[in-house]
Image (cartoon, rainbow, N blue to C red; front, top):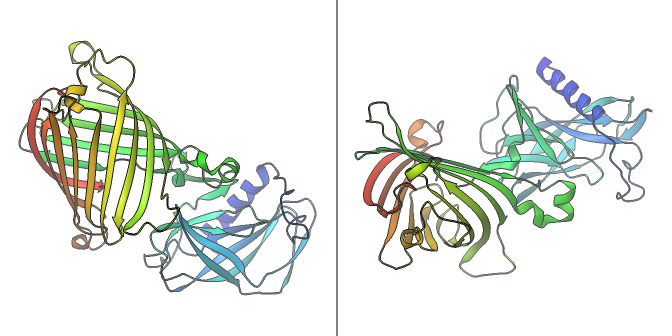
Length: 413
């Protein structure tokens, strides 16, 4: 065993020892793991996997109890590659099938298993043990990249009672609960303010495999989100920011609602949200608005091929709008976003809104194309062009009309 993997095993063993004991009253009677306290912990022999190829995975059998435990190595250990709603079942085949192993208290035994990655496994996924009596620990990997020779210097996420924890330097976070929310881009144009960028993320409050998430799946839809849109005057004397929009929100998401065959409709999603938006200024330049909104999204076609997604959003204003009490004349009470194109190719996005008097509004067009192939498949970014015309590109200028074209890159489109 190499030093990095031996150290990882010690860390995993220590984590098992310090967490409280889990009740197993809900396990089926007669289960081989019902009374012996053995846990299955996956440890990668490589950080990435190749679809359709055989790979090796080490499974650590952990004895959490205070007495020795003897187990028989099973012929098959069920597992799955999991990525959101996608679940691809796989089988781990131990090398030592039928061998009897005695595990000392607070110790472990290593079982080398063979794994054949399915041809349809792709993207960054979590390989999870599917034994119902085990408390699944997981490893993060990719089913598309080529295998690496070593895991030295990488951190393996460990799942402890449904919470996947990863460490990076001085911080600790749960990577499976973070995801992008709105597009993330940086663009530059000719007119002031010539710089425009946006970043956005959301955090799942209740994990899917947590006790509450398993008993009440609807609670897993609750997220905290944050989006920031900034306009940067890069030609100014001190490179000042013209305006910023800070948009924290609480939202509930119901992904992929598909009760039956809907013909050309391949996907239906629903999003409900409470959003605050302000520019962080005071005095005459202070702007703020609060809305409650609902957005269904209908997708026609395959998102991995050619598709069209249509997402109308309707909102109501909440509370006082004294900083901009006529904003509904320019933003109205909703918008419509349409995205069309190919999943791994050219995409066009159009977002339009009309003011309450139907005489003011705006249109934003975003055209993007992945340029990873031109960068040796090593840098995953998009070439991005954006045209905005109409009222209210910035919150500060919600009642000003303008037309701007910018180009740059995007990380999420």
